[in-house]
Length: 209
Ligand code: GRF
Image (tube, rainbow, N blue to C red; front, top):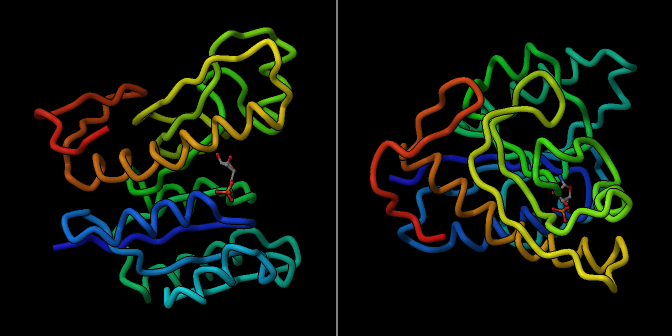
């Protein structure tokens, strides 16, 4: 039976769309039970609504800096939707240790760099400045420290001499859209063991890269 996945977004939601598209396959282990945004005007939210997916918006601004109250409201929405696992996809709020503990090893994120390099924002410009020849994206389990957590999967792209932050971002994003559905399937199929920061395969992978 498909497991119930929520996707948390703040913006355009292209990774959310990739997960929604992947979940349409009958043999994909997830169904998208909820798309939740902290920004009522997120473009991704309108897209999800238009595609018949259950959506909710919980505006962090109405919680007047009470981060935990905001997160309790999100947690309640996730419980109401009977969610098994949460995917962060361009969700631009830092989460407290309380929320992260509620979803231990059931909360994953995609980050546009090869972690542990380039945590935080503006990863593509910083990769260019640093002169790296390989850049990419990472899907990882979420831990309280930002952009730190056991790495589930990564995809690399070469950095070209002609690259600008935008051109590099575009090639990385294309990889994100394949990597995230693949990594989510691996997690849901129970093919992974987590030991500290290491994630290892417990059986021969059945999900295709
Ligand atoms: C992606 O680059 C993702 O890696 C990062 O935020 C961006 C979200 O883009 N966490 P989108 O909203 O999925 O298009």
